[in-house]
Each structure stands twice: as structure tokens, then as C-alpha cells.
Length: 294
Image 1 (cartoon, rainbow, N blue to C red):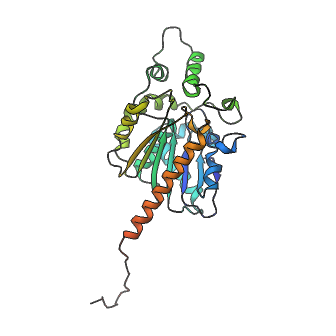
Image 2: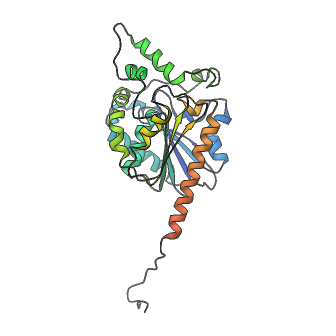
Image 3: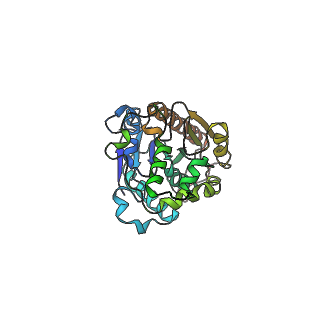
């Protein structure tokens, strides 16, 4: 497993960021645009940011047979987080952050409760119901005569569409777009059906961000309600729309605004953890033979 890492010397918390389909961890470090970078903004504000190359991308792309099931992908990602953070301070704990297909992994990791010191979960670019045009393309229901090229073009329009939402030519810059692994087609088809059952097992605070100009998932109040209703066991679920954002929020012109919202949520989770720790009764361990207090 490979990753990009931006460390704060004494981190308030750690953000573990999981990119979407057909890109890499570079999604969270916009090429030549440091102001749009989650890694740089997070580290500047005192958060360590670990952006993993998800299973099937980066260093793990040479072993596709190791990640055909959701369980295998979660195991790999959990182990990678443990390895990268083994000797590094976590501050108040870890916030998982997923975008698009990365949300499938982030939600499953949060539901599995194996991430040590898990503070919360941030997701964007996902939902419960595809827009009709997206469903036709992503679930394989094509009109007669469609081709792989037309499908790729359709996906590109869905995730990069919208005038004035992104810096010019950012999608063509180094490291942003790469081929996806074979298993991701089936993940795109199954995730809307699997999402509710997995979300119901998440027991940490959840924040959902929906782009104002989302092209893949149902948007507006109905889209926000679709997602928040699924996290029935989370102690707190908040959702909001990112003004001026398209599907790829972390590469858009509104990326700074979005990243500040994510970091604000991480700070809220850190404060909640600290309050919880202060409320726990102190315990004193007696040695064998020591007289108990009267």
C-alpha cells in the first residue's frame, strides 16, 4: 500500500482520506494548486493528513487478486493505516474521510470498528440513489450501439461537468486520472444497495457533504435526507450542501471551503472525545495485598 502524508508536529487529530474511482491519493493534493490541497491545508492547521492509495491503486495495483472482496479491501486498508501511523502521534484520534467510491471503503472501515481511536466519518460524492443519467451509465444499462468510449465519455461528463466549477485542465494534470481496478465496476453497481446495511453499523459521528452541482447522485434536500437517514446508530449525523461544488469537491474551486468544513468537523469530534474522556471516572489500581479504602 502507498500513500501521501502531510504531518503536523503535534497533531490535533489525523485525517485518513480515501479517494474515489479512477484517481489516486493525488486527488487530495491538487497538482500545482497548494491552496486547494487537503494535505497542505490540514497540516497548516495542525492536522496530520494520510491520503491512502486505495486497494487496486498505487503500489497495490500489481496484486488485483488480493482485493476482489470488500473484506479483503477493508483488511488491507486497516493494516495500512496501522502501519503508517504506528510510530506517529494521533492526537485526539482518527477521522475517516471518503470521496465517491472511496466512501464504500470508508463506511465499511468505520462500521468494522477496527480503526483505533476512531473519531468520526466524513463522506462526499456518494448517495442512496443515482441520477437517471448516472444509473444508465454506471449500472451498464446502455442504449443499443453504445461503446466503451461513449461510456467513458459519459462518466467524465458526470464527474467533471459544470461550467466554472474546476480550475482549467486540472483533470489532465499529472497523477489525477488513472485506470481503475477491475473490481470497481461491480462496486459501483452494488454500493447503493449495500450502503444502508453498512451505514447502520457506524457508531461514530457522521458528516455528509453534498455538492451543489452533484452530477452522479440525487441532490438537494432529498439527497441529503437519503444519506442521513441510513446512519441510525451514529450519535450525531449532520449534512450540508457545498455551494459552488461539483462531484470532485477536493479538486474544485470550492475545495478550500470544503476542506475547512471537514477540518471543523474533525475539531468538533476531537472536542467531543476530550469531553468524554474528562467525564470518565478516574481509576486507581491497587497492588495485591494493599488494603482497600474504607
